[in-house]
Image 1 (spheres, protein in one colour):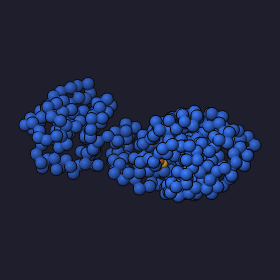
Image 2: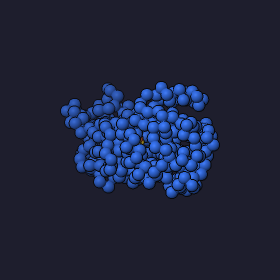
Image 3: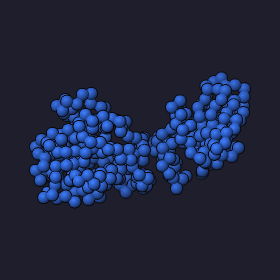
Length: 336
Ligand code: SF4
């Protein structure tokens, strides 16, 4: 690990595409530091395209890193707990900084830059959280947070005189006033609003994530990808129905329904697609069809034609619209 004596003028920045990381990179770059920016794709929300544009404007190289499947283990069993959803923010930041550290070592850089602002987010931006993250990642003194630097211990690049601490700031809290002022100063036009953040912070989404953890101990990445699509209904321990919400989601399901699932497509009425995951018994196919009809445009024809595709086979089935009671029963199976 670099110490003050072997620091160099190269750093790796975590760039989300938001205002904070944009400012952090601009501030360090103007001090003559060569910067490589990285952006994380986490399954549960990302802003890769924004980050790419920001990197381009800042004139720094840009790499997107996807989290690996072991990230899901951290979501399932976080060492430092959850926020209001199933967002394990401290563990998540540790994962990102550990990955960034490997990238830094490979790139021959000697420190990291983060746009984090002290006390801006309750779960991972307290002083204690910063200390925990640095200690767990063995990155003590190697994470420079220029927006709050004056409120934090002096880092190695500051000690080594690579950057001038006096040119950094002491921003803290949730207010954006100072950040917007800095945006003007650094010529950042149309500074982006804070993003909606990752889906893990949403209590509704958290229900779907918990459902996967409790029913599929050998989960895979796709089971989490699909949580971003549609309404979900749990039929039994291994069976679930997903009902799409719009045309884009229909296309997604058509393109990405894996083997072992059955896709239901409406033929003679305007309805969503349904994806049956798990036990595709006749009874469960009927339930999936009933779910589809529940969310279809009314009035429905007397006989609804539905194509089922799955496991290399296609067949057409015909259903009478489900009775109210059956639809109510299905509503009770809804996860969210
Ligand atoms: S909000 Fe999501 S992406 Fe951000 S630190 Fe928390 S878990 Fe990670």
